[in-house]
Length: 164
Image (cartoon, rainbow, N blue to C red):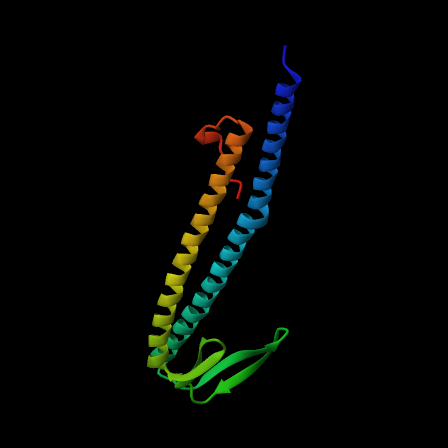
């Protein structure tokens, strides 16, 4: 026969385990997954910056190949309203160097700057990718801890699927 004290201790430990499971699940949802989302969004924004710089690089290289300083372009005024613009001397351009500052450069200076800037941004995206991997590893670790807390049997590798 089971004593009332033993069954009450079993209920309390089971209740504490459920409470811990809920805390860990909340931690995964409210902290780790949100952190992962922020880092991924930041990485995507940096990739977009790299894309803009590479597009500028391609444009500058095309301008150098044509050896013409006259340039015609469609300029977006906003809300998808475009006007045709004619640039009589495109030998010098303004390049966004960061923090909202533009610097006037010739084509060679701009190409050199773009190479350096894309190198820096690529290194930053590599770090952000490592941060994503660390957060994913932490999520996996907490999920494994939850599995142990709940006494679940580990699924075979082939039937697992990613949950994040």
